[in-house]
Image (cartoon, rainbow, N blue to C red; front, top):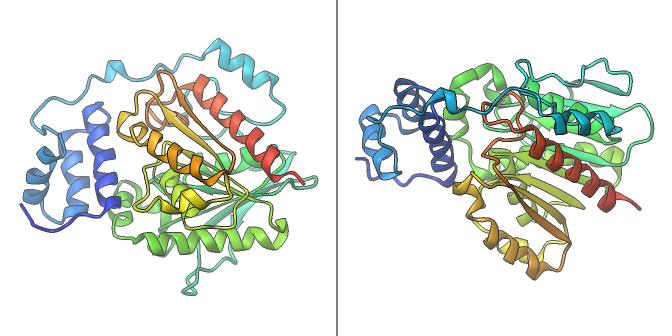
Length: 329
């Protein structure tokens, strides 16, 4: 096996592919293809995967064990009673719960945003038609600014926030990379990723005047942790099942109010929760860390096989309430 040292981001993305294979969402062939986009060699991939606890010769998980798409009655009732858009009562196929022409919001692609290197950034923005409560940077999963992420941006706007998402791989074409996205993402450095996210925060700052928050999912949850640890000018943050950043010392000094979201079944990520909570406790800033029962990684993504409506709705409503509380004034 290669003696190359793998980065935290590379190992995180490979770990997500392993989980997808073990849960039966991708085949052995697709697992090796995606991992080889990162390692550069099928032989290296075959040697590396067992060291990460993946038996590539074992059968993939039983698709029958995937999350049910039957609507939850509790989720139906919650969605009906909430004055802003929430995750749906059952898994979707197109990722749309709030249409782009929803009368409550103005939404569309951002075409004038540039990174610190001058490169054009692919962005999507939505804002309420009334007064804005503040700006929310929505950080994607490891597939780009997909329709699901654009929908999350629109959901935030229905709750009164001006929301923006920026594709981390804007220079490479963004979500158009499809199943090759994660391989290209693994080549980005944390510094490059945070620079683009700061460009997004700068854009929001021009209209929101210090009332800034961020929410991110999976890979994006890890980026949210990194933004908080790096001292980004945030009043509130909500990392959804985000991996621990390489350096958490900044969390001990943060002034950002953090609402951390974990899934009980997502043991690979949830195991880092107590360490993150201990660091936040040292800071003296408000924080809340919740592990949602019977929820797995990506449980908030209603296009995912792991979608779980009840915890997704509770976590999203909790996030919106947290932002409203800490962006007020």
